[in-house]
Image 1 (cartoon, rainbow, N blue to C red):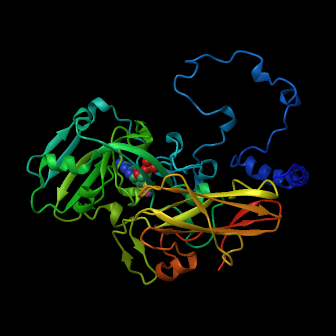
Image 2: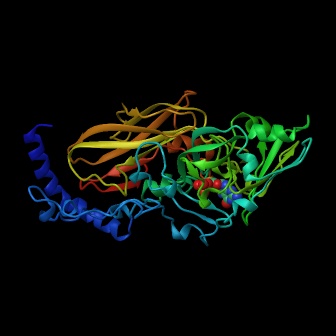
Image 3: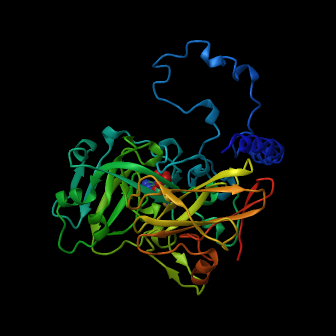
Length: 427
Ligand code: MTE
Ligand code: CO
């Protein structure tokens, strides 16, 4: 950008910020967005020597376990109080609009618990294998860590992600509409090795992982998947799982709905048919328009979301802007992401940046110039199987509006002239 362009941009920006600050103000009151840019202290600005350059800083060990800067304290998981009756059986949401790249920091991974967080002492932890096996086994954590291990980056998406949006635009922020997803590097043991150690009977067809928390969550998983790419994981992003994420051991079921990724894993039963547990009958089936229910909809279909701009991250200036977002597919990698600024009249290729891993999130960018006109921003992802993310109308034509789970429809953000962003629908 030329110097004159910059100067022009600044003038525009100053004029514009008053509008944007008002927006930031209302949302910031609710604690939802970065506090409106604080006034700079001239004492810290060139040509002066800034305050932090004048004294020795804290030494090593002042923060034995590092925490983010105090200026980032608004970057936290958040829940929506009215969604659930108690926090023990509830969910909070990843602040997607504040993140970049493809890795979710451990402290910001959304949490979904049905019976609160189990605080497991690893020395008392045991994983039991029983059912249709040659020898039932009980493993300690040390036993598990003696199996060959592997490192894999995978997303976990709750099947209920975007579930509040089936009947129309509802929650104002991608944190709330799409934040039941995280993507971390797991270190764990292929489940196959553990099952083979116990020895599978010839009639073994299904496994039932069970959690050690108060909800004792359990699901039926077909043996082919268990032997294919499932892991029992004990590390995320290099460090021990966080208690919220199932410390000391959780199941990883790549590409499949988050509910199956049993945390605080205490038992795996092997059987010849599914168990029809609560979480796969009363929950996690999809009620269709015709009154019939689809069950066992395990894979998470291809989906994407523009994280910036979004309601918690308004546009702050005219001229050059960077649109950014995430795309993923439970069936492979993402081949292409298109974005539109005019509600689908014109689509342009976004730039996928960073590594593209199977069943992991992909980061995309689209650089654009904004002249202050209202925009209708959408993204549409296409995965490695050729599947194209549907519009919400296309999805409802097949699924009706009785569903809660598996809403992967295209999201629309309406950008107003003052940069404010709102969750809307267009048809
Ligand atoms: N496992 C146990 N034992 N208890 C639970 O409540 N919740 C499930 C799954 N595994 C749950 C569980 C659901 S619905 C989801 S979406 C994921 O864990 C959430 O994983 P996270 O809390 O690590 O984000
Ligand atoms: Co879930």
